[in-house]
Length: 390
Image (tube, one colour):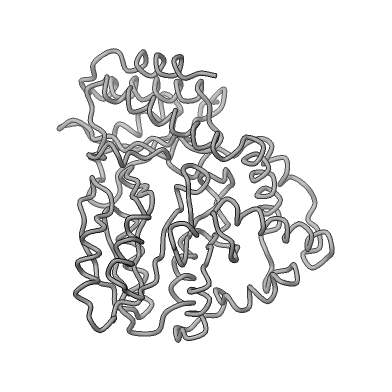
């Protein structure tokens, strides 16, 4: 295998690049996870996470993937046979609904247009017809990583309230936390789920869920089996500054540092930066003559752009060539989009030169596999970056 000089560009929409500061923070001896230093660290960490989520209540931190917290949200609030309404406008919405079914719940799927955001009116229509209140929870994905579509969760909350329905609102914010505003309390969300490996700039391995007082009340009535995911065990331990089981201590060191980086930059500046790189990417895609898979400009994602490939271009072959020849890893299509799209992440620890290097590799990769792309994509991105610098 030939030596690859320089740094490989990991431009998936997650996992993202881990900043050197975070790597150094994790590269240290472990401490007693039941000792005073750990207790002080955890209490400060939980408080700061609440600020990032926009949540005044508790944030649970599990040694898991974000998908684990899909399960945690369900088993801590629901009972066997409960009906959940899942709006599916992408691969991960469908996966979450599948998890609900495997846990003994009854998922009712509202199929949406994968190129558009969650349809709050469709949710309202189904809830209005639920006169008996059989639907116990509504599941929505804030930023659908598979399609590059961001939805308006506030509209979903308003739709639920307009129906005077008691269903809990559960939100997947895995690829939006630390990228675009997540407003757990303002949205009236009951469970908001995320993970460490995207906007928080860490390796995979930490799952997070912010909860409301309604969710904690539902916990007292819930009848699904739970052990590792039990919020009660976690809450009691967290109040003492510890965890009920062995935590991912090194990742927590990294999380402290990544939160410090977000605090130093300021969340509003972080959101602006992500929006800037997302728009530069979209301008390059448009100049190449390609289509953004998201068909609603008001729902364009600041975390990643999903690009629809021309007929006859194999997305998997394109990604292989781009990775092998130009050392850039891009995301592929998921589910029915395999081979039809590619996904470029522009989130986390990322700057303009990294974006331009990524876009150059994409253009070279497209030409390598014979895709017809118009010139000018790089210039369009550079012009926008120059105009918005500072």
